[in-house]
Structure formats: C-alpha cells, structure tokens
Length: 410
Image (tube, rainbow, N blue to C red; front, top):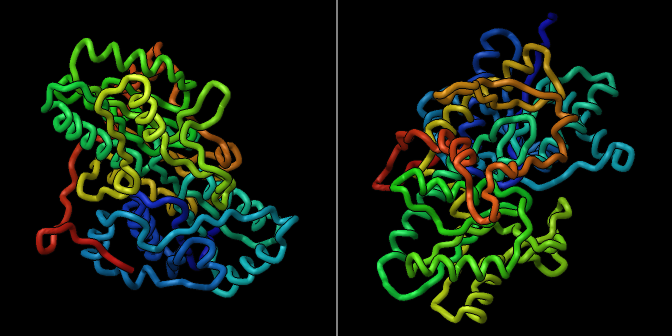
C-alpha cells in the first residue's frame, strides 16, 4: 500500500464524558507513532468540533503532548479538552458552501487524516465527510471514534465513556440506598438518570445488586412502555418488604402512546431532539397524589457524565486503545469507518478493537435488549447484569493536586 503522507486533525463532538479525553490521548499516542513511521507530520486539534474547524481554530497537539506527563494527565481529565459542539452537517446538496469551505481548509493545512470523537450524530458527520472527500478527488481518510455515555451506537459491544458513567451511577445509587434506609417511615426516592431512547445507563443502577445483594427496588427504561398503574402497584408491593423504596428511571421513559413522561414543551436541540426533563418529578407528584407518603425526586444531571474521580479502568484502557486503533486503521488505508470494541467470547472478560462501515452505524440506535429487562418491565435480569458488570471493573490511579483531582486545560 502506498503511504499517505500529510497532517491529521482530531475533534470532539456531542456531550462530554469522563473518558473522551482518554480516547483523545489514544489518538495522540497513535499519531506520535505514525509520525515516526512517516505517515503523519502534525496532529492538529480542532476546538469545538467541526464548528471550530470551519473557523480554523486549530492547535498543534503533537507539540503540546511531546511531554508524556501531560498525556497522562489528559487521560484522566474529564469532559472534552478540545471543547465540543452540536452542529450537524447538512447534506452536500443543500449546503455545498460549507463543504467547499471544509475542502479549502483540508488543502490549506494538508489534512489527510480526520478523526472525530463523538456519538451517533457525530458519526453522521463522519459518514458525510468521507463520502464528500471520496467524490471530490481528495485523498483523505475519515474515521469515527465512538464515545457516548448512552451506549447506544450499533456495531460495537459498548462505547467508551459508558463504563465510567455506569460506575458512577451504580456507586451513587448504592450511596443513596444507604442514605434512604436509615429511617423506618414509608418513603419513596426517585432518581432520574440520562437516557433519551436507550436505557443502558439507567440499567447500570441495577449493578448495586452485585455489590452487597441489594438493588434499587424498581428500574424503568425507555425500551418498555411505562404504565403508571403498574408503577404505583409495585411501590405499594415493595412497602410490604421495607419502608424505603428506591426507584431508578430513565429521562426517556414514555407511555404506551410514545409520549415521554418528562417531555418539554416545544424546545428542541440542534439535532431536532425534544428537550426532556422532569420524569422523576412527574412520578414524585404521582406518588404524592395517589399514595400520599413521603416522596422526593432527584436528577443526577451533569454529574453522571464527567465523574473523573471514579473512573472504570476497563473503560479508560479501552478508550486509549480505540483512539490509537483509529490512527492505525487510517494509516492502514481504512476510511469511512467507526472504531468498535468487540467482546471476546469466554468466561472471563476481554475485548479487541475493530472497525465497521460508518454507513451501517450513523443514525441508528441500539437499545437495551428485552432479555436484559425483567418480565414486569421494572428491573434488570441476570443476563443484563452479566453484560454490564465487566465494564465498570477496575480503578484508575488519578493524579491529585492540593487534595483535588488534577486536570489539564488546553
């Protein structure tokens, strides 16, 4: 294969995670190796994703991270060090001007490798850019690098960022369980967890069962239609066993008619997604009205995305591997692909890094399989827990400075 020589650029898009910078660190490591092999001269970082790239807001990552110590700190720094955006590229036919501008910048900086770290909508950008480059006689390799706490990308067993978020959710639920169990009065605590169309993160609340044998009493995911009457009956039934009822709900739970419990009024984001908030609050009011006991609701909100103090080692190790693997795949000739994490069959957990055609991934959503949810639709099965458990394993040696985790700011 003829060597494609030139520069590379990497960006981060969508919601931040506790592991997206580990993936970036993996890309940087891969690029530094590729530099020594004669493939990549400079790795640029685009600030704020494709929006920053269009402004030519670039920084030289190969120079900044020639210091291995900085790369180590980046690995455990949560959120997106390069900044993010939620811009979705339109089709070439309707926005030729933007694509012409992108091509102009590619040529100006001799960009031959394009790496985009993101979730489902970011993979749509990868698909469109790879097609555009191929159809406009510009040799460039475009690779999607997955990240999302939602864990909803198809073609991969799971996504970087999910394991650490799941570890935080399960730990927080265990701590909340300890808190709400100190009193003998009847009380219901409802915890709302992120997940619009896929309930993977909420399902991870069930992992508490594997650590002490006690789990949240009820877990509700978007994959099963929510029945308010079943919910009330299950709360009352749980009261027969103990007075403190702990419930985990996805922000995306919806009724049988498809309407979200916590659907906002009118507001949508850049990708056309309706704003969601208040699913737990709606259920709090329902319990207050129909049962009349003490009840409270809470949202984990942003804390579940970037909890860098409780990282999953499995997640961080795989994030680094996926980032480095993206560079290896590109320099080997792959383009129009997304990197994947493939679980190796066997009793003990292990995984390998692969890649899949981006056209089979973009704009698809992978939900929690029905066999991972109990028959009643309000809990996680043993099969579901077996899938989730390895992803939160291991602890990371986080650097501390003056008593607090050390972060790098670019």
